[in-house]
Every structure is written in C-alpha cells, then in structure tokens.
Amino acid sequence: MSKILVIGQHADGKLNSGIAKVVNAAKAIGGDIHVAVFANDGSTVAAQAAALDGVAKVLVVDRAGNDDYVASAIAPQIVALTQSGGYSHVLAAGTTSGKDFLPRVAAKLGVQQVSDIMAVHSATSFDRPIYAGNAILTVEAPASPCIVATIRLASFQATGAAAAAAPIEKISVDAVIPSHTRFVKLEAQKSERPELQSANRVVSGGRALGSSENFNIIYSLADKLKAGVGASRAAVDSGYVPNDMQVGQTGKIIAPELYFAIGISGAIQHLAGIKDARTIVAINKDPEAPIFEVADYGLVGDLFALVPELEAKA
Amino acid sequence: MKALVSVKRVIDYNVRIQVKPDGSGVVVDGVKHSVNPFDEIAMEEAVRLKEKGKLTEIIAVTVGGAKCEETLRTALAFGADRAVHVKVDEEIQPLTAAQALAAVFKKEGAELFFLGKQAIDDDAAQTGQMVAALLDLPQATFASKVEIDGGKATVTREVDAGLETLEFDLPGIITTDLRLNEPRYLKLPDIMKAKKKPIEVVGLGDLGVTAAAGLKSVKTANPPKRSKGVMVKTVDELVTALKAKGLI
Image (cartoon, rainbow over all chains, first blue to last red; front, side):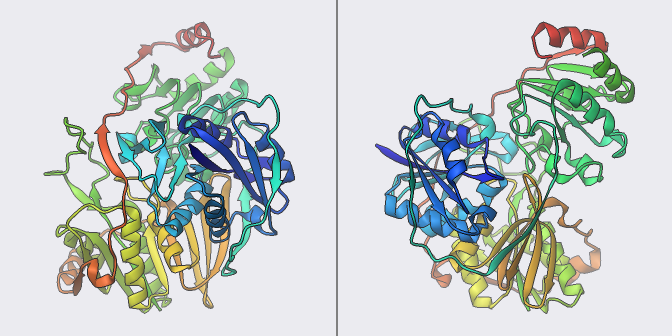
C-alpha cells in the first residue's frame, strides 16, 4: 500500500486552499495520507490540515524561517522526511511555491517529477497536460524509490471535513539548511474579493479595456456577482492590473463555475487557464474572436456599454 | 564573471499542435520550431547584464539533437560569446537535462545560470530548480527583475500572492518569467556574426552523465473538446439564460 506525504503549504497562518484538493488526489492514489507542515510555528495550520477528510496524520516541523518557504531551505527538510518516513509518494499543490521547491526535492531523490497531475489512473499512472493543455500525456512513473508530483488544482475537487480530526505529531528532521538564500519581502495584493483560484465565479478583462481606470467596470461587475477578478496576459503586460491576476498557461489555472471573459480574444495560452471552467461567457466586439469557439454564451458588442448593463441587470 | 544560458528547441508557440492518431506523441516533422520563448528572455537578460559590464562572457548551452544547432545559433546572434551543444539523439527528461547542464556549469566555472522558467512543449517547469539542487546552489525561479551587485543577486519573483523578493549569494540559478524583459529583434549582421562563433559539441558520457530512469509515456491524447455554445443578442437574453441555469 502507498504511503503518501502531502506538503501542507500555507501562508499567514492559513493552509493553502489547494491542499484539500491535493488530499483528494492522494485519496485517488490510495494509501496512508500524511500532511507535513513546515512553519515557524505550525500548530494553527496543522489543525486545519488535521480536519481534512482522508488525512491519517499531520506532521509538524517547526523551524524559524520555514514560513518564508525558501525552496533551498524547505527542500532538504522534505527530502529528509521522505527518506526517514519511507514514503512512496510526495505530493505538493501546483502553486508557484510547489513548482519552486518540489523539483528540488525530486532531483535530490534522483527521480523525475510528474508535473501538474490532472487525473490519477493508478498509484503509478497519471495524466498531465502538455503544450498548454492542447494535448494530454499519460505517464507511467517508476514506483522506486518514490514518486514526486505536483497536483493541478483545477482538476480536483476539495476533500470534505473529517468526522474526527487526525492526530498531530511534532517532529524534527535531520537536514542541513543552507544560508545562501534570504527572503527579503513579499508585496501581496490585498483584496477583499474572492481568491482567484478558489472563486466560484471569475470575471476577467483583457487588452480591450484599454487602461487601468477602465478596468473598474470589471471590478464593479465582479463585486455585484461576488466574483474573483482575473486578466489576460495582454492586460497585465499593458500594466492595467498586477501580475498575480494573470489567467493562462503561465499564470493561474482556474476552474470556476462561471467565467466571464470580457474583451479577451482567447489566445491558446489564455484558454489553457480556463479549460475547466464549467460555464464560459464571452463579451467581445470581434465576432471572429477565438474565445467564442469555447464560450457557452457569446455576446458581440461594445463592452463599455454591455458590462454596466449586465451589472445592472444581473 | 561568466554566465551560462540554456536554450531549448521547441515547436513554435504560434503552431497549433496536432496529436498523432496513434497516440504516440504530437506531430513534429515539418512543423516550425523556434527557441523556447522563456529561454529568449533568459538570453536577453544575460546580454543586458553583459552590456552593463556585470558579465564578461556568456555561454549558451542546449541539450538535444543535431537540429538544436540552429537554436544555439540564435542564442549566439542574441549575444552569447560561444556555445556548448550537449548532443543526445534520444528524447531526454528534465532530470537528465539538469545533470548535463549542472556538469557544464561546473566545468565552465560560471557564476550565474539563466534558464526559462518552463519550456512550452512539456510544460514541466523543473530543470532550473533541479540544476540548483544538484549543485547545492541558490535558486530564484519566475524572475521578473534581476539585480546583480557585490557578489549577490536580488531577484523579484512572480508568485501567486504577488511579487516576492529573494536575495542570494553567487553563484546561483535564475529562471525567467515573461515580464523580466522584452527580447530584442535580431539584426542581420548579428545573425551573420553568429555563424562564425564557436560551438563545442559534447556527449552525455563526456560530462559523466548517464540518463536517469524516466517517466514512460503511455499515450498522448487530445483534450476533451468544449462544444461551441450559443450566441446571444442582448444582455437580457444572457441574464435570462444564466438565471435559468442558476448561475447568477
């Protein structure tokens, strides 16, 4: 039977919302599921992980500096824990943080990493997207010494709440932490809006908005719909919105129930980020825009007239 | 200070890829290839640092088949001084590529290594981090700003929460994101000059690397197709449809 280590990524005392999805992927693999929390003081985060259905045990590794999640510091601790615990699988959420530290773990363990698992066929066979999701590759990973993989969050539902909380164990790991890399700061965008990657509804704007002031009609519609706000690469590159709002192949991959693409033409790189959205609505003045090929509802016209009208009537 | 920049030959980002009917991969023959766009950004960043006097030499490196020579020529036209071609005929996976690149980095005594944050073919996004792990060196992935000063690198990274800044002691590995810079257009004289620059060809064996056991590709398939929806004429029609489905 598999013994699965899930890395319990967190920030500001909160377990990353994607971990509930990683646990569900681990359940599909099947086996004993342990969540490891690396933090300065992991007790709050550990309690959240222990409340997830399917988790057998939560391991807490407290160390000053762990909250910063610097890859060269976190990776050796994961490697040590994987080896001492005899884990068959190490899984992390496919966030920018998981993508940063996990290949480092894989290389140290001498295995190829499976990136962005979107479906689990067995304990060793998985689907993953290639070419911006325009092809799906099924891979068979060698079981020995272990399988190291990131989970594509948009492909999995979150596991529910456990009937009883899993036990929490404080442990220490035998790892050498290099001092060559220092965390300086994080400039986070503070927002009251739902988080892009877990929002049920998302409204995204593109280049056609024309300026950051004009983007206000997107925010305004999003607030009416209690939606998260995203953007195309073109809108980010033009400086209308910050980088963390980018949806697409190299930005965030999302799977909301309802997605609005407003003034977004629909380049394949953008479509790669919204393939799993349940319903896509596109508003664009160009009837030939590729976004209409994938939209469930398309509306051709001037977004500056249509979006305020939609906000008033929705 | 020497910098190494790795470049990968991939199917051009404008090409609509086609999955082979037998599921053995995607069609690559007769399809336009170019330098992985993130690697062009890596190359551009190194050239800018050299122009600022922070670097003395730029060495381009690739791991791949004979056709990758044109990829190296492009890197040389950007401004690499010379190139190393790790020639392999079979397809290799990120860990093996990382082992080869780490060996070249060590052999060249470079202090900075720029790689694209991911290649747009396999979208694995692993190689830079693996090189850093194998060499026990610092890494700063997804860079959108790089400053090199006094034996240190200060790197702004694009992360899910916003922008993170890391500082590390050289030598180290940096993987480049989209907004780090805009790669220059290559001029004909630079392309001509690149033809005369030296390319050293080595094999994995010369670097003491044996290919690591890899993932086995079972099959390649088309993604599930989204069916084309309906066009509505008015906002009222749209709102009615979304309300009927309980979406708003």
